[in-house]
Figure 1 (cartoon, rainbow, N blue to C red):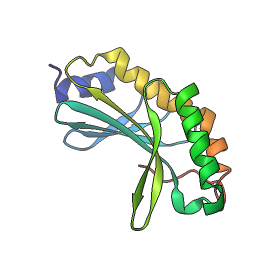
Figure 2: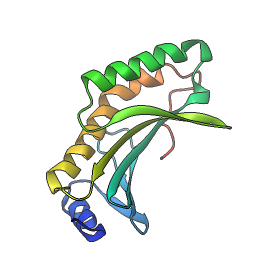
Figure 3: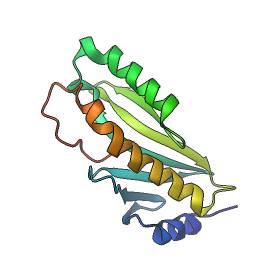
Figure 4: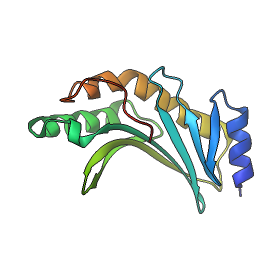
Length: 143
């Protein structure tokens, strides 16, 4: 079984700059150029990856169905290690890029492959997703 120390060692060995936010939670710098941050968090025996892509409030309600269809298409065609999803809150919600991996069999190439997949997705998809925004297409805040 891998440990928190193994995850941190994999991150240190990877080409991705990172810093620990709190115990078992790291902020990994995306290399796509979008300057997004990938939150990597150890929760029990699961390693979670998460990136905040865009606020749902920024999307015109009349175009949300079209955005959701695009996200499903991207999940089916371009995503290997993760998927786009949404969270809803009283304040609105977010489009996220997420993945989860079992710690038991995690190896370095899987961790870096997931970070690479997220970085590639942000580089290739962000402009397409941001076009749905009613606001100026500035990069979204960190996750």
